[in-house]
Structure formats: structure tokens, C-alpha cells
Image (cartoon, rainbow, N blue to C red):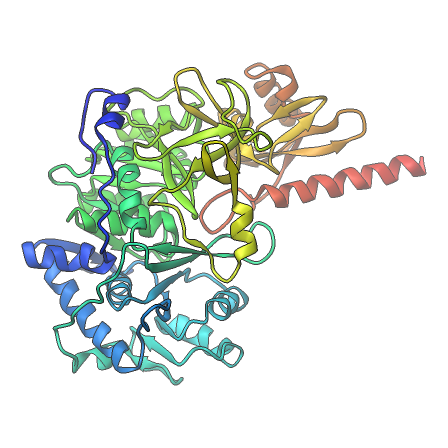
Length: 562
């Protein structure tokens, strides 16, 4: 959808959306290529033992048509004027995962990506809330679904890709084997519901963000620009991010298949840097989306271990990367890591692009062509001047925006505000736009630290902390303080070979103080064994804030006794 030009502004001026009235994700990422180039490679499936099997687009069409026919035979479908039946896809990266999403969307139904590490309560909430009728899963998933099935009355069918087990699930292979290879996809409108992705739920229960078929087209400019103008000859895509998350499904799998780019599916029993490097090298992977946590783990390895990789593009999003990781990417991976920004409700809307310009220190990039993203004042609903902090927001309508939260109109209304220019989707993040139009992430609304009248974003502090030779992972939050309101508290996981001590804590604090403003350095440095992280690799600062608040309360009680 993008045309490569000499500057970001030229790319923006030459871009225009082309969203057809009728559009179906499954047809686009599968049948389109199966008709045009049946033998074109689509999925390279690498199992935990390292066995590799390749699947063409023709294979995907055959498999998805059989599954669609089987599901239709069980009564799964869509009534005219209604949202299609919901189908949970509880699988790791494997060919059947792609087949399931393709089949469900070709049926005009709604697929629900589900993370394989979800516990029973997390699964129960998503399946009950969505009213899912079917779950497609593996043996381990079938056992978990069986444990909650009596509490989720909407589930009528559990399909297991590992064959029939001891429960009442049916075999994927047996169910599909007798079905026809031919299926006529439902003629869906581009605004018809297609995917229901549940947010991580930092407050309250996770909410289901309902996306239309057009969401794939809305993602394309951001994916293309963050990978230095995808597609190029010999591109081959992989991410360690699970396809259950928007970063794996709509930042990698579906956009790659849209462009006819092979996708490597690999379900590591446990992610390790050694396994990732070996996979990238052995499978000749050229394009990678690496979450910040994976990058930080790779950065701990000697640069020479990454030698021999033939990467063309590396993109990352979810947390601010900072100068340390960007420079490491150049030195070790031989590419400039492109940072992008978005969220489940409105993804891939800001990005850097090394093919157009070098990254700017502290910036997460520019609004992606096609998206109007800016920093606004939530009170006046006006764009903030350059250099003035405000709420990061995207102007509606936008093809990548969600349709709304599933069965939660109040939360949907709260996500948007109306201003003189129209309707803004407010991300809940704080940011600043510089004089050149780049955007800098400051922090979540509840992550920004207020100290002695200053508003301090944790991202810059965490980046600086990672520059200390002893620090492996770092999180910064505000700790309540009687005088300053809050002080910066740093929670640090040390690298191997370093031990906690007061001297080391003071050295880490001095490292930040000498590099950032005096009011930003951590007056509290605490060493922890494990960093609280979400399943997508983001630091759970709320957990760190709770530790800081409990510590401050304990100190206050101690002072009262004295």
C-alpha cells in the first residue's frame, strides 16, 4: 500500500487508503494467493523437535476449506444482520492456528485468539464473555477447557488438533478428512466483525476489542514502513510473539500472508536466545518482530553470537527501546531497529523507518501514513504545541481502529472524546510532539511520576538504567514521599556476576543522575530477583508501584512509632 520515496513526508503525500466495500481476511491472506500462485510458500512449520514442514497457499486453502465446511456442518455460521458465531483459537504458532483463523473469517464468523499460557480463570472469562460456541485447541488446551466447560454453557464443540483425547473433544483431522476441498466464503463487508482480541486488563477484567475485516488493511502501512518497505525479494518473516496477541497475529502473520511472504511458525517449549539465533540462521529469516524483552535478552549475548544472520529488517514495539538497544541492533544485528507504537484497539499508528531517516534519540517515530496521530489536551480537545506534554490520540475514522469493546458500550464511549476536529481515540498514554513532528512516549497516564512539581516519564529512566553494566532489567515508578509527593524508585534485576549492595545501588543512582536531569534520578534503588511482566513482555509497573506504596506505608508507620 505504500510507495517508497525519499522522505517520510513524500511517502505521506503519496499515500491514500484503498478500502474496498467488500473484503474478507481469509480470502485475502489465503485464497487470493492460492488462485494466483498455488505453489507459493506460505507457512514453514517448525515443531519443538526441530522437524520442519512447508505449506503452500494451496495447502492453506484446502485445509481451511475443509475446516470451514466441518464447522458449518456443526451449525457454526452467521445470520444475516448479526455478528457471526465466536470461535476460540487456543493454539501456539503452528499451521493449524493460521488455518483456523482463515476458516473462521471465511465463514463470516469471529475468531478469538487465545494465549496457550492462560490459566482456567483467564480462559473462562474470555470464553464466557464472548459467548464462544467452539474452541479449536491442542491436547493441553482441551484439558484446560474441559475443567471450565461446565461454567461456560455456550461452548458446544471442542476441536483438538492432536486427535481425540479422553474427553469429549473431537479430532481436527477426523472432522476435516471427509469434508470437501471447496468452500464458498461469505461475502463480508469490510466493516463486518472478524476478530475479537482481549486486552491485557491492567484495570478490571480484560475487555474484548472487536475488530472488523478492514483491520488487516489498516495495519499494512505500519507493518510495511516499520520493516523498511515490506515486501522485498526473499523476505521471510518470524516473531517469537505468540499469534494470540495482536503483535503476532496482525503485525506479522496476516500482513505477511497478505503480501505472499512466507511465515516461519515455531513453538519453542521455552524462548531462549540461543534457540532464536539458531532459528533465524537456519530458516534464513529476513524480517523479525522482536518484543523489547526479547531484544534485551539477546543484548546480553556477545555480539559475535549473532554473526552470520542475514536480517533485512527488525521492528519492535510495546516499550520504548532507547539509545542502548538501537545501537546494539546496529552493532550486533547489522540493522537499525525500527520502533513502532500502537495498542490493541488502534495498532501500528506510529513508527520509525531507517530506510527514510535515522532514528531520533528518545523518539518512537512519526505518525504512519494514513493515520492522524497527535498529542492533544484532553480538556480543550485541541492539539498541543510542540514540546508540550499531552494525551496521545488518533483521529477517527481510521481503518485500523476497533469497532468497540464487546458487550461494553460504556467503555467504548469512554475511549473516545469529541473535539473541534472530530472524534479522537485516546490511547491512555502521555507523549510529546517535537518540532520535527516526531512523537516521544512519556508513559501511561498512571505511570507518569509526579515529583516536586515535575512530571517524569519512566521510559527514559529505564533506558538509562539499562546502560549500567550491572543492570539486566529495570522498572521505574513513583514511591510516595511526604515532601516531594513521590520520588523515583528503580527496581532492578542484575546481570550474572553482580550482587546486590548499597554501594552498587548508589552507583546505579549516580549513573542516572550524571546522564539525566537531577530530578529524574532514582532516589530509591531496589534489587529484585524477577521483573513482573505481562505475557506480551511489558513491565507491569502497577505491581512495582504496589511494592513501593507498601514500603512507603511501612516506613511511615515506623516513623510514627519512633
